Image (cartoon, rainbow, N blue to C red; front, side, top):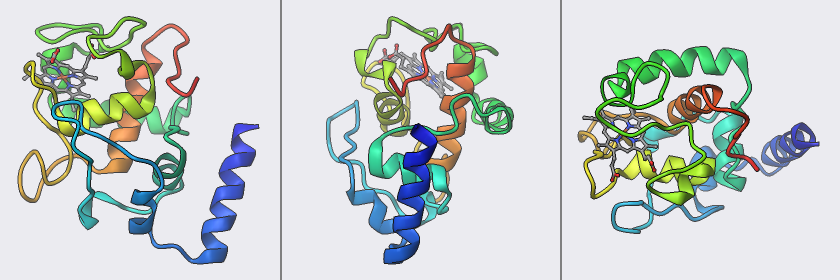
Length: 162
Ligand code: HEC
């Protein structure tokens, strides 16, 4: 049922010819740190179906997708998440990320976890989003969705799309 929805939104996007940037307005994303609205620089958007679906509905279609999880694991290592959260996201210096309990309850959803990682927290977690980590560096929207898919793959059944 969910994949049907994705097809429909992709077809709609093709019909209307909406650019990737326009998708940023469809749902409201707010930083966990200060609740300000997340605005995406153009370079943060690459235009994949997963990115479009997320910005339209808050759902992460990469959860359960083996290819995306594989890439997500590499990015999780690349961006040093491993150092603080452990190789399988069960926690190290930083907390475990597989749930079901979180410091920020909204992290049980993919939208909430995205907001937390993109904009960071006030309790020791730096912003990782493109343009926030450094002026011209950081994770893209698509990359973060893959990282979250990897994190979810280490948990027990919580997809974040519930
Ligand atoms: C330098 C250490 C460090 C790195 C690197 C780091 N984190 Fe964190 N992270 C933390 C700490 C500490 C917290 C707890 C912050 C808080 O409670 O406010 C945290 C919190 C989080 C949370 C919220 C967990 C909850 O219980 O709500 C998520 C999700 C998260 N990190 C994901 C990531 C991801 C993904 C990466 C890599 C892109 C990453 N972190 C990189 C230290 C780190």
